[in-house]
Length: 499
Image: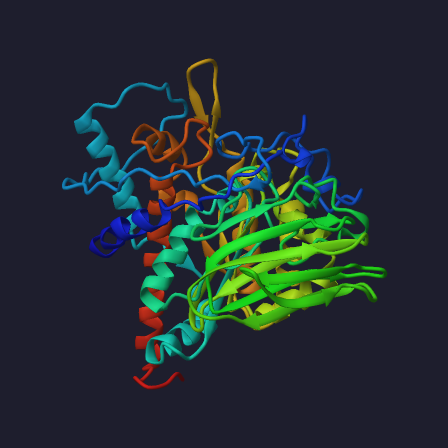
């Protein structure tokens, strides 16, 4: 636990700095719906094992947006200060089927934290199939040998646990502290949904944009939503999006389409480029180096013609990026509905070193997903990811523990996670992907009650607080570094080069 605790204070401080915003003037109509549509109906087709979807997990609560002149991201929720626990309980925690809420005495809280952190530090539940990560380890080692050798880009697709950028923000901080700061990496254009943030950046947009992809039945014609499944469209002049970040390089991703309009790309008041988006349907991107330091980038439309933005990227000259591509309420099958050719072009441009898939919370709440049907879908997803990034290994993060209400004041562990974990683990073993059993790392079935009782889980018994996400990220990073160190020892990687 000494290694894990050494990082907690660092990560909590860094992740707690939210993405502050330039506050704007009208909330977009896309930020609220009466019902949350599901990935299964995004294209009107059913995948193997799929039938009508059950309600999905709600995203974590965020502050309400306000009406102003533009639409802007609100500051991130600052996680609680990490607490150093002196005592560690040796007795493993056995979860009861049903829990009733109640105040936890200080001594009991310390004992509970001791049990949780002991589980998080356990070497018995680590990364399964970690040998699959060796291509990533080779690149990380090269960065340690030569910090200016290049970029190592890690891309995490997921649901609301990813969208909040608390877990991914903590992972970004840890990787960059050890292997070098590569910048914020990819983000959605503008401010496509309430609560969207990438820590270390600020973003805003004008009110004229139409958002596609955040509501899963609304992917637009042919699902041309880009690398991360979200796009902003307009046909009006004068619409804009902005992004503030420290960077030495900028990339703007957009859709090339017949009759597409021009966009102007600015760094502060300096016009970097006027780009036409007219042409046969394909993915376009504009890339340029910029002076080191903080920047205010803007993309502006200039005419009455269709423009669709797919993403923005800011990077440093070398180091690691840990990029969050998450959507509230998403299921793993959603990716299969996005246009693959468009996504493949942009993924090739990113040259990803590792794909992380973090799904299962929403699927677990739907008893209509059979284990076999889910495994068939997940196998298709892994195969697609390998087409998108043939050189990148894949790490699957199993769903966290979750509890549902049992009566007015009690909670019961959700056993539906079992079939998702079994299906994911089976596919990972068959297709040689790495797997991290997040629920087991938390303490197993029923552990969420304990996390909530010490302030590391939210009141919905599904999501975590900032401190809880930091603890989980610290545990995963410790497991990755342990395997990375074993890789170096196993292959005798000499200083000055990789094998």
